[in-house]
Amino acid sequence: MSEELILEVVTPEKIIFSGSVDEVTIPGTEGEFGVLRGHEPFLTSVDIGALYFFAAGKKVDYAVNTGYAEITGSKVTVLIETAERADAIDKDRAIKAKERAEAGLSQLAKEQEEYEKMRLALARAINRISVADKLSTN
Image (cartoon, rainbow, N blue to C red; front, side, top):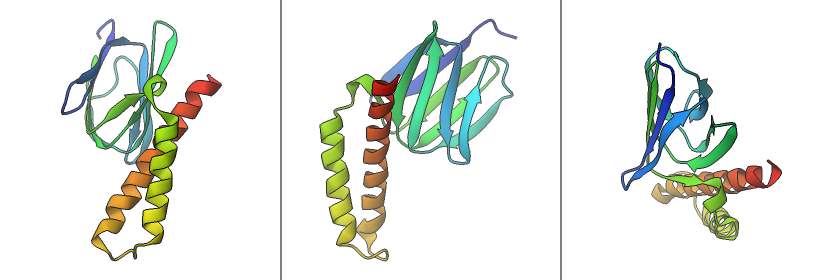
């Protein structure tokens, strides 16, 4: 078994994080799950939510969008659409995005094509607000 657990968080634009961590928690589509060194290998989908890890005794939070995670005994690779570190989230902008999405949803019927896009925009905005709020309570 490897001595360390390597985490890579990658978006289509860039590598968001790459380094050694003590543990990582990922928002899977089947529920949140944690990974430590020596975890059983598997591949899973990632949902909109909070990804966080501990490195050198410090917790780091990210608001993430959908994607995939590959877990091996010594490495976790998370391939996601977007990731935003908690301390970089513009909470006012996220609140405005939430308000726009709520207003848009109120104007759409569930059957309309734009409804699902607007629902996902709302979920992302709520997630960003939630992750930003966690930072202020840590």
